[in-house]
Length: 447
Image (cartoon, rainbow, N blue to C red):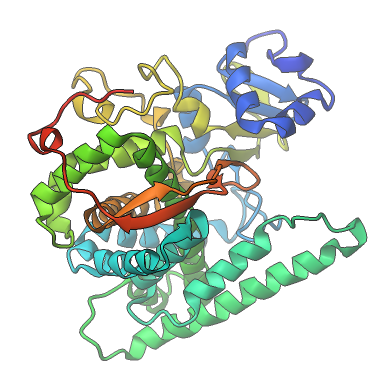
């Protein structure tokens, strides 16, 4: 039953006042507007969702009532349910998701941990890193090797180039010159597509003993006529781009949090030493790295990589008792949902034990935790990203100590779809020994 009246919202939910307030402090604005209810009117054509149940409605009906209307390069696309390409695209996504959900099996071959160790050793040799670029380079190699095998060619470099081309310039270009940035962006996208296409096709004639990778799964689908070669290349590019940026951002937040929470760091170090005894982690170790995984999940809760998700209404539909019309937009912020006191005790605190001690009879609503989105269009790298974070954290913590560099002043980066700690620089040095109190066993965390 539809509710009469006007949906509440800040600043009267009209004009440009809310847009200006949002641009001044995006995260603060989103947290503040929670007071207006579970569905908040941003302006005439935009609504904000503050409820896991309503978020589930939006994501469950994506591709039908709600659609995605922009592609990887930010260009407008026909994402409507009547689009001829949608079924083929979703078939390809399903195949890719199936492959990525076997990430833990791939971790058993030590490819993830060995790649992390190689990068971390180079950080130590340099003495420090600019966290986001260094972790993006690491995660680009991790996901490239998973998608394409040991031979990744220029893919990590080209992924970085495409990422750089997507970011807004330090000095905004005049309107008459913005086409230069678009041309650079599309050129970077074409270069990456050509390199991915070459490496995918090369998998047909491989003679190594490397186990199958995502590209092999997609090639088989091409041979069956389920997807085209171009579709397979598009899926690999989407996975590469989504997984590398989100995983890197989350790892940057995690290492910053470990530096600020020495008790958490000591407890994790005790677990890593106790379970791994100095060797690199494999898939068989992951179920035993309970506290490490809890740290990863708590980092993803406080700082979800996908902090702001957009859907466009494709047909008249009801949401929260309100009738929405085609062309209107609905936004969901995992950052806000993850800090809702209705679902989390002391939600602004970093408390990994909440993922270990949560009572069995008090499950979270399904969409109260959604760091990589949800529904049919969930980030394809979601499972891979979580596994890679656990492996990377255990590998780095077991070998090195990362500390906030003197003079580094990280700040929230909300100028893209991924939440990053901008300006974070980390010193990389020798790791400490485990304190006796930490090595003796778990203990309560303090502030």
